[in-house]
Image (cartoon, rainbow, N blue to C red; front, side, top):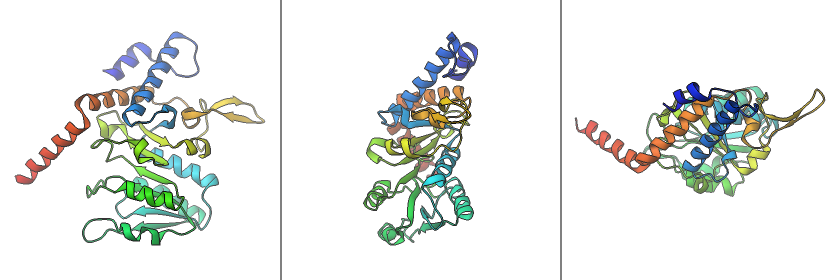
Amino acid sequence: EAICKYYENTNSNIHRGVHTLSREATEAFEVARKNIASFFNVANEQQLVFTAGTTDSINLVAQGLAKKHLSAGDEILLTAYEHHSNILPWQLWAEEHGGKLKVIPLQENQQLDYDNIASLISDKTKLIAVTHVSNTLGLITDVKRIKSISTKHHIPLLIDGAQSAPHMGIDLKALDPDFFVCSAHKMYGPTGIGLLYLSEKWMKELPVSKPGGGTIKTVSFEKTEYAEGALRFEPGTPHIAGAIGFSEAISFMRDIGVDALHQHENELVQYAQAL
């Protein structure tokens, strides 16, 4: 209904028009960003970038880091149970730029080998990228423990929250990752929309890899000055209706309560296993 309301009453491009519909659409889009930021306990909503989904978000980070922060011989640390979306972008970077992927192994007790993570880290390790919850095994990564390790070694951390955001409360202020990604369609929302959370540091330091209309402050053939905040990473006409629908899905989850959703899912699991 929220998506239909946008198309029926406010359908217009955003951030660049002065007419009524454009202003109303812009307001609805940015209100959606604020609502979603609040859900994830992010005080500055400009740290949330709307993307096409988890895969697009990870690629945005990979392409940006490849410009200035990753070099030949550098290493990226992943877990043994990553989704393809958090393997292929880094694998492509490694193949094209002479990088290397290292994998945190899974032990027989179905836990990551946390004790040996430090042994996999070297002065060439430039990123730790881990899934919060495995999409195949259902294993929950102790991201706080990994965050502690990444902080100790001054290595940025990316958390793939595609499978965690729909099923548990995510407090990004508490988790404090450098990057966090997830998709709306796994959270009762529309397809083709997701988010990339950037820490304050990486909001300023992540290079633009997808330039275009909407990302600029001033432009000329000689020099372009890019916008600040989320718009810097949102080229072209975004999925406006998708963002509004994503926000409505977030409100739905908030109204029911994430804890209630988690309890209901556990009850379904117990029921299925008893059959």
